[in-house]
Length: 170
Length: 93
Image (cartoon, rainbow over all chains, first blue to last red; front, side, top):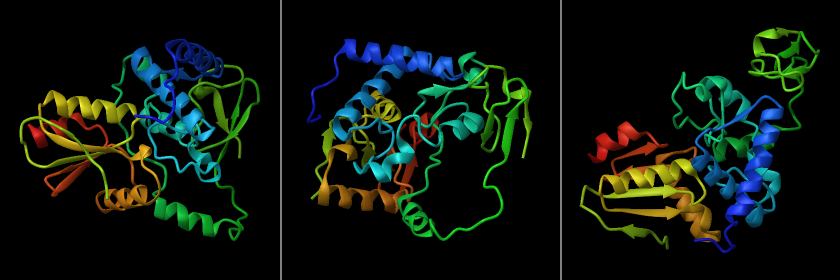
C-alpha cells in the first residue's frame, strides 16, 4: 500500500505520547478514542517518511512543502475548526466539549480553500495593501498573552485559563 | 488510465470512492460501505503520482471542487463528501 516501511507500534506509541504531552501542555486535547488517534498519528509518521514533514493525513498533500505549509499538522485550520465544530478536520484534536461527551464528534466541512482558490490567492499575495487588521487581537486578562484570530482559544496556551478570560484588545 | 481497486459485494449501483490511504474518515467510510456489503471501486489518491494523479484530481473536481476526501460518487448521479454516515446509509441502504 505504501512505498515505505510502516511505523512500528513502538514508534507510534512514543509519537502519541509526545504529541499528547505537547497538546495538553498548551491547552489542546487529543481525541480520546486512542485507537483512532494512533491510526492518524501513524499516518502522520508515514507522511513524514514520504514528504519530510507532518502533512495532514486527511488532505491531499502535493509533496511541495511550500504549497503544503498550511496543512502541516497542526494545520492553519485547526483552531477555527475547534471553535466552530469542536474538532480539527481529521478529528485528531477535539474541544473540551467533545472530550467531556457534551457534543458528538463528526466529520466536518473542509475549510481549506479549493485548489482553484489557492491558485488565485497565490497571485493576489504581494498586491494586497491593507490598513485594516485581517483579524481581531484577543488579550488574556490573566497573563497578557495576545493572539490575532477570529475568536479567543478555548484555553490560554500560556497560563491555561479558560477562553472567557480573554478580552478583545484591538 | 486510472487504476481502481475493486471490492466485491452486492450490487447496489455503481459506487466509486476517492479516498486517502492515511485518512481516518476515509477508513470509516470504507468500513461502512463494507458493512453494508456493497460492491464498490476505490482509489487512494495520495498513492498516485504524475499524470494519473492529475487525471484523478480532475475527476474528483467535477463532483467536489474542493477536492477533499472521502468523496463518494453514487451511480454517477450524486456525491457525498465526508463521512456522513446517515446519508451514505440512506443512499446505499
